[in-house]
Image (cartoon, rainbow, N blue to C red; front, top):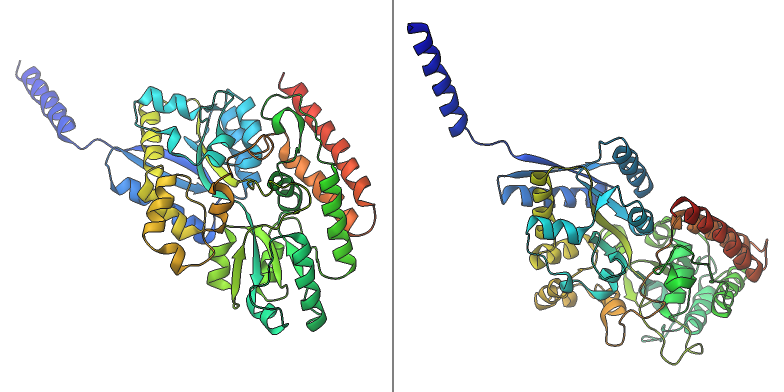
Length: 442
């Protein structure tokens, strides 16, 4: 009898201790592709969320490049071991959307968890890319950029280029590059990063020209590539002529050109607006940021808007209701104007809400750092509301299509193929990849 009484007391004490003990925070795994300074900023962002509440702990984990992160996330999902949040770059969007079993759409997540979330707060050019056919966001826009033109001001000044020389069109660029070439024959002239994205996808979007049928892939799996147009042929031909004239220099398929510009080898660079932070921090040169050039003899309405690049965050499937509540709270935190404004100013990525842009503008940031608003104007100004062919490109196997385009552009610029043939071959090879994706997802 005494033993039973003691056992009863012991159970009561254990229960009381358990009830009074603080509940362990739910861990939210966040796989991403940001290393270096950007990775540090992301960790700080997660730390700020973690410090603001006690129920959840977001744990960021670097998984390698965008390609490696996407591959790791999809493999883990198929094995039932997906993280709660996966960062996926823009060209992986269609693959994620059609693999419906992998992720929970953002609009569904926020509705089911009851978290306040305003889709209309996002910049249309950004939101439209990550929305389904009904306009509902399927993932959270996170790190966003668009291509701009960087100019080495000191090099132009020393070459005798008149202050205030217009650099709005590709033809005006040519005149200035020739001036610099005459003074500095060793300069590489113009170089670029991400050739397929900058020199083809965005050149077409800037003029509201079709890259692929079916609304650039938004409206169906049966899209066909159509980028071998008069404008594309003209532009790639111009870059080929500039290569021969030594005023355009090919640097590689990724961001190799950015490093050459930072070292002062090139007088101009077309690259992501997110390169600003690194150039401002590391480059020992005086540079300016200008909008991407356009052709003024193609359309009276050009330019329209450039395309956004970057990545979004996906809530992966197979989690508990409590875990999804934590993911939703983290997403709602990331969408706050103050958080967005700080992320924009500290990383160089664009603010994805108008409120974040307005907060930054009122702070005087754009006056203090001239050129940081150029990319925003390319996406936000006046008539630059996404048009039929300038809202984005959403194609299956887009990464592989870019690799094909890059390979064919390399052949054109190396004079191994005429530009038209290179573009025709890129279209044919890319369409084979689209049909392969269509068969796999019917």
